[in-house]
Image (cartoon, rainbow, N blue to C red; front, side, top):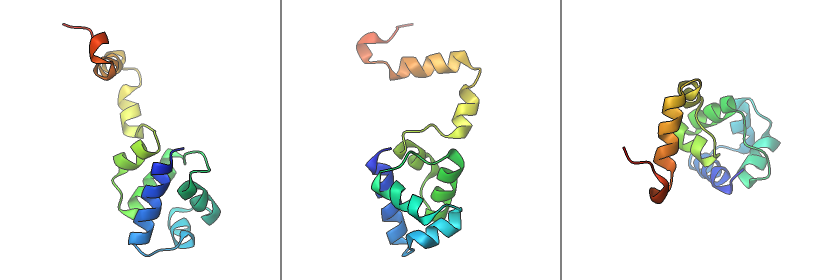
Length: 102
């Protein structure tokens, strides 16, 4: 997990003046897990937990998924079984010298 995600959560939590215990209660996680997330010492939370954290802290959901180096579940659903879309994304992500020209 990246430290960026933990820093983002800690900053948002401090801005809302809530404790790790308060946040944990709001999102249904253990407060020690919140601490581990903030310190970057745990694996990324589940998609459901990321959504709950984003909503509780008023963080953009997509931004939090990206901070955890994860793909939002609605995007995964669109990609599943759509080889053409997946290939378009790969093409877009390829370095300019390796992109196919049409």
